Image (tube, rainbow, N blue to C red; front, side, top):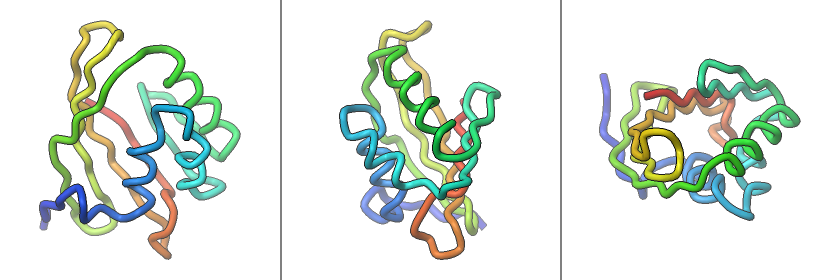
Length: 116
């Protein structure tokens, strides 16, 4: 069963990632991931801290954009956040789903999949 979640009720690793992933505070965003976490974005897979650092550095430097939270829900261990991005990328506006899976202790992200 899917349950709606308010932005203020999202687990700390997710809110920290969402708040810090776009700017000079990327180190705080990186620290929200398990050491062997998996990120899937644009069909590409990034495993572990060093690959996730390179992915995040590339994403942040490639385009300028703003993010608007549209909603979130949970169906067990998976929490999906929907954001609207507006920026300098092709098309200029996109709604993306960020599917997070937290580790067993709920203190770090073990998987993140970003897709339309």
